[in-house]
Length: 184
Image (cartoon, rainbow, N blue to C red; front, side, top):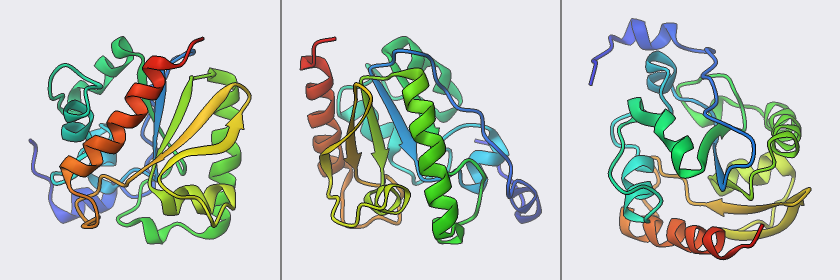
């Protein structure tokens, strides 16, 4: 993996990282917002220590462990990636309440346009802020966007010590089973 200087990472602040999306996906994963490493590389969940890619594989969504640079391969598995807030920051706490709400509005419109079967938001705090749902918990939600169902997953950041890779993979696996069992 390319090593970036602090100055190079700081230069990535506020960059936008293109979504990995297509119409009719099985699951559209939605991060909080791109971190600086993601913005510097242009690859989602690129920070070493982020457990998204290992958990995606451990849960059975992908047949092998993908590298962030292989993110476009997700489309062949009916999977995609977007974010609640598009701009990159060093930490999620740099995103304000109104920016989360606006991100939620934009995300809802994107989901209604792309029509994935499931929207999987990785991070209950971001979901609560984006959709003003303070009582949301990990798992399937009552909210839908058209025919798209919503599932909130644990945040795969290495900073989330409440969940291990194993317990995260179990929750991601519950979503995979639901997506597999859902009929079009």
